[in-house]
Length: 265
Picture 1 (cartoon, rainbow, N blue to C red):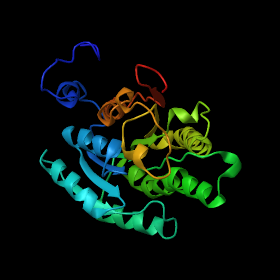
Picture 2 (tube, rainbow, N blue to C red; picture 1 turned 45 degrees about the vertical axis):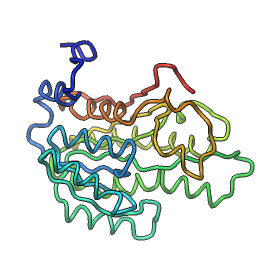
Picture 3 (cartoon, rainbow, N blue to C red; picture 1 turned 90 degrees about the vertical axis):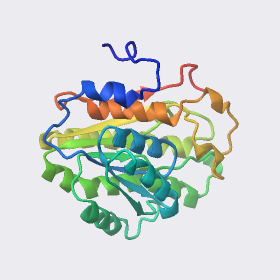
Picture 4 (cartoon, one colour; picture 1 turned 90 degrees about the horizontal axis):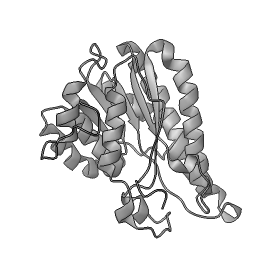
């Protein structure tokens, strides 16, 4: 059944239809995943998709209250879900906080680095503190997460790291300079990491979505007015990410750009 042509139009979810086809994905690795920025948007959607595919999930976000409802929703799928309040924008002590999470949750085979922020503003007038804030969350926190999880993935015998970049990493958009630079650097980090970790059985995937209808557009650091009905949904992005994770171990999608069918907004 070719992907995209045989999926039945019914209440049956993408995971219900697709997951049974994928039985060879790292069969010896634990079905356990960690997702950052998991309380809403793409992070919440990928947490749901992973749970539906039978993964226990560690949920990381700034607010424990925001994660609790997601945690309860995932347990309804019959998996283990744990919520951890970690502010990834706080570099001081971040490594130790991530170590505490991993010590509590245990083994992993999938990590989705999704947490990030949007920012609009001209490069010529952008305050240095704002620049550093964007780089810290969108790039350096991912680097910190990668360093934290690599020993766990290596010990498990391999796995998949998914880093959420953006189409802005590949194209220039006025007033999105800092965001674009952070996401381009993240894509470069992913490529180097993929080469370094192949020998350990670790795949690295960079997913670069176009505009996605999430709460990013409602934050005080983003001033933009687009037709959000024309954007991708978090669920479509999540299903695409799940597809890259469920590939058999002899294959990897290293770079994937996912756009709204109407093109860039």
